[in-house]
Length: 322
Image 1 (tube, rainbow, N blue to C red):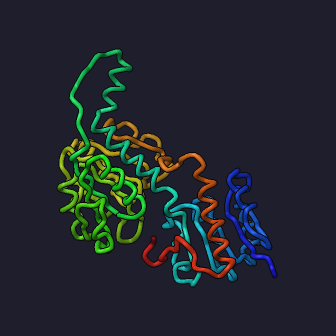
Image 2: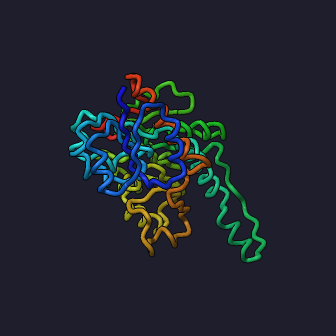
Image 3: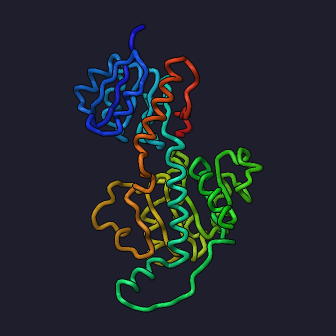
């Protein structure tokens, strides 16, 4: 049997790549992100694993990869890789969906507690040596609206329900979540502003597609309560950042907890750094211990299915973008 040829586009010294040793033989694995190496190996590769979380050099060498029939992304978000030639091709795409849901759900809960308990005020008072008692809020009984009810949304809904919150969800195919025990109501996309208007916290967990890019702008932010908090763990460009900055600077909403941004790293001097009503995570809220090794094992498990000719898990609809 000829070996399956796997091209791994990644820093070759990354420790988590040791999991590749678990791939069953016969297999030929080439690892690197140097363009010359990737260009050379792409010509004979059957499988490409994208581990550098970027579109390049995959986009450049894709026309050469005429034997590839499966591409896997370690990341859950695949918008960077969905260029027209790849979308139109018959090559299958899978991703790391599900690996990051629970850490991001915990981040969302932490953010809700951060604002409801005024943790910034506590820290500032402590640092100033000031005794400053005040009343705190409960999140039990509050309403969480989730934009994009996929794995992250479902994991967050479960935690929120356990803390006594009312949960609303918005998804493209609302009927898929009918009967979900962790959701009080499900909205279709045309109900976005209606859901936002009654939410105390809003979790944005939608993938970035043509339909979701900029879906939360000035009109949507104006629908929110002045006491509402926006949390984004999906993709930065789903929210129009300039409009969010305006709403935060004008105190038209209470605050925002952000793990993703339109430009990353966030540029020096960006308003998000100085705004005291922003909780900022440098896109690391999903980096739980061992996350990279666990993400690699998702690929290894899928590789065994691929070898046996069985259906792959986490298959992405390239046209839909998720």
